[in-house]
Length: 502
Image: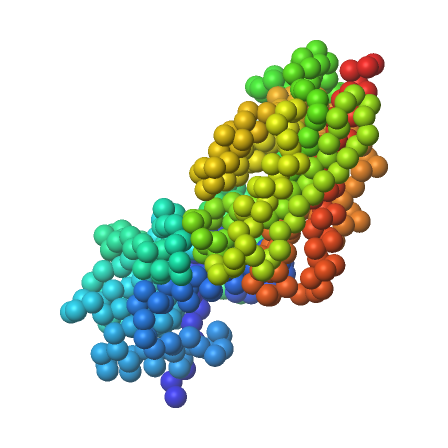
């Protein structure tokens, strides 16, 4: 049997277009590639699930997916045979030309036309999607199977689940035929350059914006090893190109930025902090801001899931669905700290559940937050957006929800506006940067779940049954993490109170 050995696939072509050195590492330096994080693994799993669901829009196809992803020979031969037979739909249809492989998500015959369809798990067409689609069109055309139309199939974010998922309504097709045709010569020129990369000669490529665009390169730690780990010019807050200008002048560390270099007020505060260990604390601005808060104080934080495929009735793709909150309450100055919490049952997050988990959360929240007092959040726009969605879903609660939204105050403002800055905060005003600076003894390191992404992924795994570990212990870990977040806000507020007392 003829064996088709490819050097370039669509993923490798995308790598090479981003950076030839990235493709070189993909081909010859597997030792440099980091292991996939749990979040990346979940992203791939979600992509596979979306791909399978998309096939239902063009059903009853033959599947050319290879058993071994290092050898597409059988897939290529099957695709040729099935096309000769006039098969209407082929999944992972595989084409080969001059050491270049195209594995198309869906091949479809629409009357006399051949349609090529690539499935994406986003809600829009991104520029870099055209890169791999253009490669696929080039390979199919040169292999003798030019598609009449080329589509990107992506998720329609206006879709609202009502009943069972309707794939034909969930997905939408965007015609990109003219774009991939216009890129035909460009693909051929770039393929010629990329296929000339040899193991013995690593491409010489300086670091640049391409390291981060269209996504952060897997090998950034290797190529950026000459950049300081802390307080580099790439840590300059809201840099807007200044970091690269400094780098081009061989300035790598914030402390080495010359005095005459143009900086915004916040950037100068940060640079002076690094240079002179200098803090910026604007007590009167902080005092005025905190004086508007009204007891009782409710320190509040949501955790959410945001599945691409809606899991609850009357929700949309990627909608933030709250499943948990933590609440610390202080009823009066120097009052006792009270903790309350809510964590939904994963079994309620299925379309046929008789219990609506969002309504259950909302009813409990209505009791816990009451009708008066300031609700304290960190980056409160997130909580407000979640509540606005709940207001639309449950109009019977909209009056109370809108009232609750008006009670929010945002602890983030103190640090976002630079009223409180110490060098230990670095370039970030996130709570994970602020807490160690104000309260070094406060930590998340003892927790199994220590960030919102892990919390969301854990709960989704509990919903779909893919969780590794004990459900009871994972619930306990989720509760501990969310409680730690709101306790952190309390500690920040207390530290600011101590500062104002002098």
